[in-house]
Amino acid sequence: MKRLGSLEYYLGALIAITLFNTLLGEQFASTTLVSILIALTVTYKGFVVIDHFMELKGANKNLRFLMRLYFLIFPSMIIISAFY
Amino acid sequence: MKDNPINNSLGIFPKSWEVQHAGRIPGNIPIWVGILSELTEFGIFFAAYFIAKFYYPEVFSESPQNLHTSLGVTNTIVLLASSYFMAKAMSFIRLDNKIKCERYLWFAFSCGCLYLIIKTWEFHWNSLQGFGPSTNEFFTVYYYMTFNHFIHVGWASCAILWVIFRLKKGAYSSKENSGLEALAVYWHMIDLMWILIFPLLYVLR
Image (tube, rainbow over all chains, first blue to last red; front, top):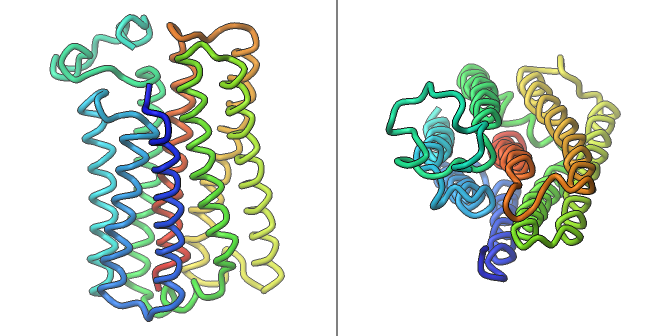
């Protein structure tokens, strides 16, 4: 059983990051730096959901590895696409 | 779950994948076969997005500005909240608190329905602006990704109703809840896909 309040903390963080990302996209010209920031926050959001909502942290390490790998590969492609 | 027969019956995995070595499997093995298949499917969509963006950079730079970003943000928050409600439902079934578990499942179902309504409105709004799947390469990718995701949210919402029905019948408890947990991890997978789709289509220019 999770400590009371930790899920609420993560939900708040995920919503704040979503709003921050949107602000970046809307207010600033799409630069390489913006793309890198967005890619990093997407990775963080993915890791939070995988570890704390899906509860793979402390569960099957292979499934956790595959899920986290997914959220390393595609955000990396966001960074690569910034150099197109 | 270690003692769940559905996780012990296949015997097709290497020893390093066994529960004793790798750790417990949330839900059951069949749902993870489904989840990894879905991840592959969405992975192909994401690859298509990056290839199309490489060949049509201007289209992918200008077209996102025609989308209703507020609706995309709202749907992101709705799905994040639904994942939170699903995680709460899991925590309450582990305490054998079925009333609160059911309540949070209804919250998650409501979020699923709200997402579908908002997305339908967004498709309608796009149509009113004159945008459709054949407008340009960006919108083709946009409709492939978002409509596919829309379908997943739709049938997973139906699955929540089925799990609520099973919960009312007494199928889940603190000791046996693998069916409910299987739905929970599937729902989180859908949320994860939107976490990737949202910046690709709405934020990046």
